[in-house]
Length: 335
Image (cartoon, rainbow, N blue to C red):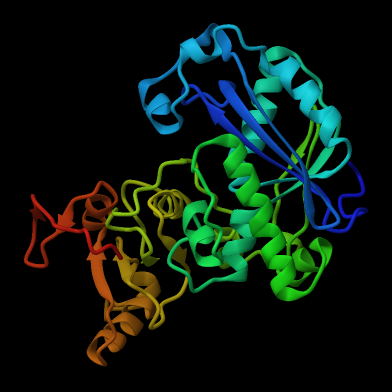
């Protein structure tokens, strides 16, 4: 699939479900074929994961258990069939970092060599296309677009929804897939048996911390929409004691928040680490902290917290402005 946009608005949307936390434990696959902007084929398969072993959390999420896949074919057999149907089409997935990882690790486990393919991520595109939305999870994007037939974590339904999200973006912007990616600064990801490049907007040549943030993708499929960092824009200043800045970005993204390298009126939280006085001077305030204080004094809804508060919020513990945590919180209002 070396010519990913050869067929305009033609692609294959996929979605994997896994039996355990291991990416090599694919237990189901949904495939939706789109040609000339229309869904022309849909198929789904159950897959027998290694040892037919399941984790209870995964089964609760998608409803698939060992009894369902006891007699199912293994990944290499299923993907061979799916790849023959998809042919050389561009692959599309929502949070493709997960699905492509499942594909590659499952293939490696079974000794299956798949042909080179190109792919894109509708989560990343949606996040860049609609930066002011509170969430880019598949159910929330579908709700915003009026896609009302999603049965989340059913692999065929998720693949169909990802296809509809991509088509909706193209239709709204009156453009083809290649044009959409170019407008948002993305280049397709490519994977093969021995190589892999991410679906990325690094092609713009930006190597600032802000550009690196755009490469941070969720490593979990179970963000809590009631989580205390969900939908929050979080900036950091100073050195964190328990993690690197990149790790802090990852914690934020996994919690459904949006990390930022700058402070503005859109910022919800500024996390203050250890201050380097050689850098900020004897005043002890970084430029980000000074900006946050100015915004707070002017009425902006921005909170300045320390690293411990950040970790407690990520763990779902509400922070008491007077110190400590609040044991019981009614957070049904959401962010």
